[in-house]
Length: 488
Picture (cartoon, rainbow, N blue to C red):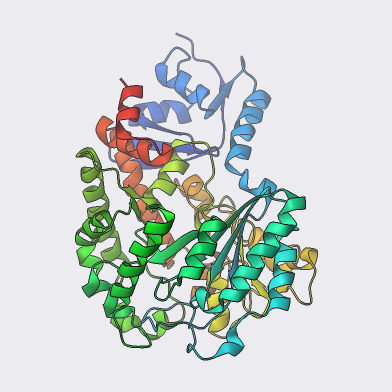
């Protein structure tokens, strides 16, 4: 049979044992045998081969029948879908209403201050101006997330700013959401009633069992932070419903080996997901590194064990989601982008999310604010009290981030097979190298992400029907039975 001429469209590839993995610019993937890959790259594929048809359908190649221009147009459409997060600009707006906190956590990344230092509270003038700036975002969705310190310590500013935002939204007609990140230590009945009335979502922290949680989450009154969390979680759930509050886990070397036990405890307490995240090197986490840190390789091994454990729980009928895996799987298995800043190219810092400090300073990500607390304001985008929306969001900081965080053009990233599933962290790069482009050869962010993506891709390529059904329940938020029936 005579072979046809065809053109190769952009893709990256990697040798995996006896086959090659190919991923194109739209995130479509295929595996080829060694002989198929050799035929592909030497122009010897036969148009009647099944692999030829698959390569053409997924836009790895184009031929004279289709035309390269049309193939590129179709590939571009898929790529635009993956980059859709750029169109509407910033949706998540985090407001630090205070740096004061009633806890003194060993790993506190924001270096919170004593509960009595009210000079670190956001005032109404700053809060009002912040809300005004937020509503200039072109995004039809506005999520306002209150952070600290412990944000409930500046409750009046939270309450008044929510009321003001709701007033502005009568005219703006955005899809408006509110989130409060709180340790739940001292939430009051008045606050719970307001939260219920205004449909505010709560986000808290849980490091595992009491022995884990109290170890590094110290309170300023030396009482158990775990006991307070558990008691007040029950209170808010009684009033607001079981799904009213999520929990975030901080992994230190003291609970890294107990992740299965912690997962069981999350399930016991009625949580439906867990985010297995490595600790970030900011604030007290740097000062106390010897006490809480671990090697990246240790985290990866524990992560894999925990993920496999969660998969087994799902296969036994218990729906429980690992959130970070779900984000990556969504990028591998669907054409859509996620709202997660660290998995975007260019980086979602400032584009998808932004944070307003108590004094009105604006940063592209929480990590940039943490860096400022450590004495380096390199990423300060401006101040709501002195700068306009355009000056803040169209200034040199955001432009530098965009210019230097496109993985398609970054050294090493540009050749990486997992490029389309990953993203860039310019703030972490700057912290490690004083260069926002960073160095992938020494990057802990790169090592961790690549290892996790590689493991998830391995599971996807193995194509175990049961495991893939679990993954699709996580991505689509449907029950395992629904997914199984669909795949019969």
